[in-house]
Image 1 (spheres, helix red, strand yellow):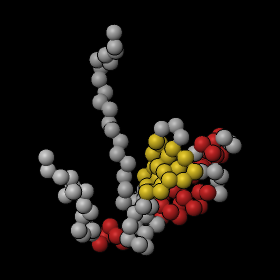
Image 2 (cartoon, helix red, strand yellow):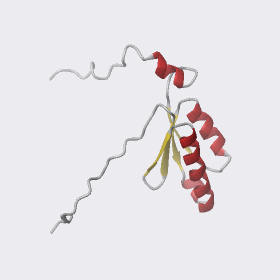
Image 3 (tube, helix red, strand yellow):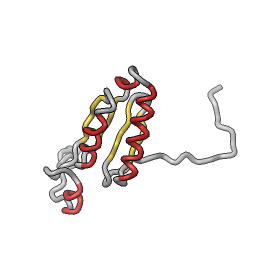
Image 4 (cartoon, one colour):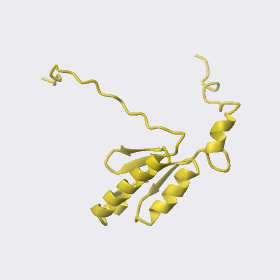
Length: 120
């Protein structure tokens, strides 16, 4: 069986255009952080503007105020739209916010007039 070493190597060259859109170091980072209060939104926005992808755990804020969670999500949706980024829910506790050069893949579910089969 051939080794996997060749598959896991980093690409030799990255397009200059992609580097210009990401942060000052030229790299895009995937960062995870809790959203504890509405004041954390400024930090989230700055990270995404600099080209990083953020996975936010909203449980700490939800334990304090569901209204604050709604406000935060609405603000992040507007922010993502304003920078031509993307935002998506990851389960019940997490949200991912992406910069302009990253899109979240969404599976399109086919619409069928046939009943969905169930286990007997």
